[in-house]
Amino acid sequence: MQEFCKEVCVDNIKDAMRAVDLGANRIEYCSKLSEEGLTPDIEDVKYLLKNINIPLRIMIRPHSKSFNYSETDISIMLRDISTFKKIDIDGIVIGCLNKDDEIDLKKINLLIEKARPLKVIFHKAIDITSDPLKSLKNLIKYSNINGVLTSGGFKKAEDGVKLLKKMLDICPINFELIIAGKITSENINKINQKLSAKFYHGKKIVGVL
Image 1 (tube, helix red, strand yellow):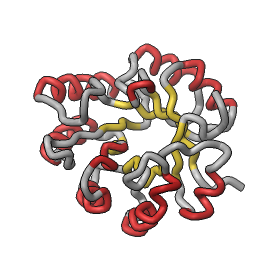
Image 2 (image 1 turned 180 degrees about the horizontal axis):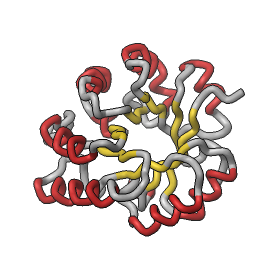
Image 3 (image 1 turned 45 degrees about the vertical axis):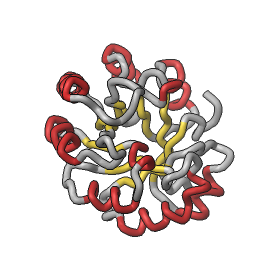
C-alpha cells in the first residue's frame, strides 16, 4: 500500500491528464517548466478542474529572472492570487527572496494574507537560502503557510537526505514537507526508504508523461 502522496508538476493539459492516469495523487500546474515554472493560464486550470478528480495547486511566479521581486512583481502576484481564488483550486505555490537570497518575510506575508483561505506552499526558493533549515523554522511560524517544497539545499533530493531528515524532524504533524529534486518513478522508493516522508514531487514521479 502506498503511504505517501505523489505530486506531479506539469505545464500543459496533456501531461496533467496523463499524470492522473498514471496514478498521481495531486497536480502542481504551471507554465514554462523550462524556466522552472511560471504562473499558468487560468483557462487551462479551469479545464483541468472540470476534468480531473485530484487536488490541483497553482504556481504563482511572474518571471524567472530571480526570486527577488519588485513592487510591480508583487502587485502582479497579488492580482493573480485574487484571480485564482475565484476557482476551486487546492492551493498556491509561491516563493520570495530578498536581495541577499534570504526569505523576504514582509512580501511573503502580503502574499499569504491575500491567499487566505487557500493552502500556501513555499517552493524550492528555500534551497537557495544560506540556511534552509533556519528558513524552514521561520516559515513554520506562519499558520497559513501549509508546507514547503525542498530538495534539502541540493539539486537532487538524494544528495540532500541528511538535511531533509533534519527538516522532517522539526515539521509539525499538519505541515507538508514536500520532497523534490529529480525524483522519478524509478528512484522514489529508494529515497523514501531513507526519508519515510509523506509527500514527494516531480515531473516523472509516476513515470514518463
